[in-house]
Length: 94
Image (cartoon, rainbow, N blue to C red):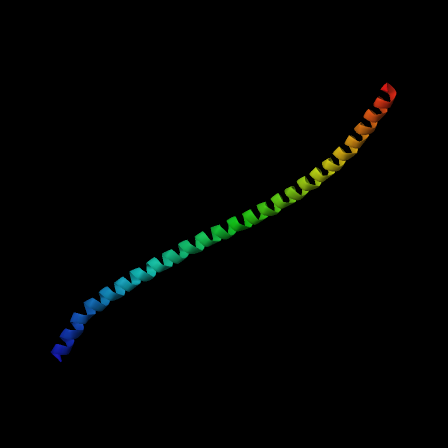
C-alpha cells in the first residue's frame, strides 16, 4: 500500500503541473477569443461604414452622370442656336 501511495504522490505534482499548463492554455485561448471578437466587431463596424460610403458615392455618381447628360443636351441646344445665329449673320453680311 505504501508503494501505491508513493506512486500517487509522485503523479500528483505532474498532474497539478499538467492542470496548471492546461489552465494557462485555456486562459490564453479565452483572451485570444476576446481579442478576435473585438477585432471582428471593429471590422464589421468598418464594413458598415464603407458600405454606407459606397452607397453615397454611387448616389453622387448617378447625380453627376445626370448632370453631365443634362449639360451635354444643353450644349447641343446652344450649339444649334449659335450656328443659326451665325448663319443669319452670314446672310446679312452676304
